[in-house]
Image (spheres, rainbow, N blue to C red):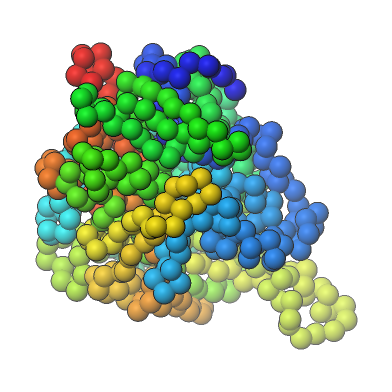
Length: 567
């Protein structure tokens, strides 16, 4: 990658994942000389996806990581469904890069360890927040009002969708705004039948395509999905959006970008005279050498937790509780979605139908609760369902009784279809849910982060409704047998949905928020934060598309402010 000896830049972007890649692209295309600093190692698109198409039978333990290695080095990361031997090089080593994990009040912090961050492992679900989402805090009084409207963000959603490539189907639902979609992925026969049944029995339910950042129509330098299957191992064809396949190549093509891997940012230095960030202090994670860089503008995109950890560790005499924290809310109002609650149905009447290829996504049931003012459900906000449709193979009969040729022949036949419906519930913004620094430091001398987070009664009441509605959906869909799953009293481990957000929220009032409506710090006008930490509420949809849209918008604003001399 391009290197420079100069330590002065127009813009520094900290982090190279979903938000950081977009910041690098937008700033560079607008003519700024940009430095991207990434804590993780270099990762070349395609070339370094070493496990992309390695079959499990060519890996030890049928593709499962070595248990001793997993327990020692990846105790937190291995809790993710996407963690496996074929992509272990993507994940943070928990032994070398720990945080304070409290078993009594756990919070799961899932991290990448490479250029591109979690954009290589994310689930690619890409939904817009609705006007109802942006109005929710003001309407029910939980949290502080968003300083923006859906109408302000809609053009930036379109800007992002057209570039990353989102496939989906327009439904005309106000609670799930339509976007600029590529053609939707095809459905299985069973899913079409389920949709018919639900339209008749549950007209309040919409079953639609999951809106995913996976190409169904090729874009320059990227091919349409060929349904090979192992998305979490990297995608050398660029069929799904990642920083490596899309934003970073676009940024580098300008000739205005330097990317430095293995660069841990430990502090941001603040100049009391200029009231700006004056230096970005970096530790080389391979050599432990320290260096400093300066820029006219700094974009913090390291992820919700890492960015807030950095701001807290950058406290000084002017900001004793954390950089840009005159409001006192930095680190508070941490949010995540809760998941792992729903129902699954067994369908025995479709044995003549099978599927071709490995469609890398399921379907989606948009929010259908608390959409009007006359509902009294015992909780506020709402939830959506992500689905999975599958047909089991011989593995499902592995322990079935039998002997001889008839038994062997039975194993060769596909088994019944299963339709899985899992809820993702909205989390209310609450001050008590926070992250903070401890006295224990990591190997680079940076204080480790810890968490204090609990689900509220509102989330638990919502979880109970999720389970009841999921059971009704699979039953009305025609399942021969159904089963509920998940505990609505003991919800999923906070952080497990990997949708952590909040902690440096935006808002109109500088006394109650860290950022203004353009993701610019109220206290420091050359500091912008555009990862999930800026979020004022969580909605119930996957948030990554919103991070990208706000990042592009913030870059446009920052460049205009630079050119006008306001920064």
